[in-house]
Length: 126
Length: 183
Image (cartoon, rainbow over all chains, first blue to last red; front, side, top):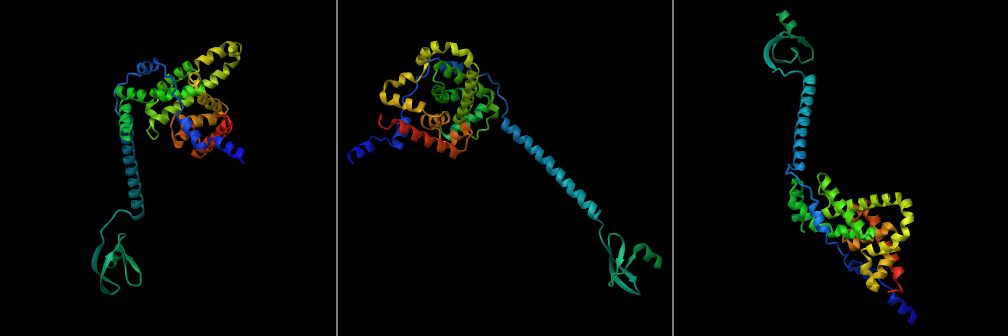
């Protein structure tokens, strides 16, 4: 029992081992190293920070991309809906009565039964 | 060195200010040399590799984004330099074989650690460290002697943090096993 206890007390703990490693003596640094390293620093010309350039480049790139996306959306809209023409409301004789109707953008006149007349045909009736 | 100083130094480095380069050398040359000394166990080789590390750092300063600390970045470059030099030495091993006997004696005196082994306790710890596998030795060296965090060590060695922690713990247990009864 006593031997076991002695053995255990001799056993180094991981914590104390870590502490020993942290406290190891400092390696001797050659005196010539520091001046050599300082002398080896290259002569750099001051230049604009690359990070800044990088950001500008991306900002420009983003603008071009955004413009292209907007242009594509406008193109899709124009292809689907055509150019905008304001609707015109007119009082017109249609199907033997006067009605207030709107011409749609393709110049078709619709009545309540969903029958329609083309504007040119209506003028022909007149 | 606080985070504010670090940011300012980084800005100055990118602007190519000489003073910032000097500052980095003064802050880190001892750490880089110590790391190299423990890795190579040869003063002149450690000195040479330290110079190469800084030269490589200045060449690649534009690629340093500042995500890691300057210390981590320099240690990573130093580690790569050491790996390259080891490969080079292995290639020349056949040529050096004949000179090995003569070199052994000279090498002992050029070992930057041999002067520290006057103390029996320190000598035992160095002996124990030599019994470790290379990866474990480097992990222990970076964390306990160089003072890097596990996350920084993982970045230097390009390994997951968990692996580094496991290697450290295994290395400590091996060291303890080696030292138990001797210390």
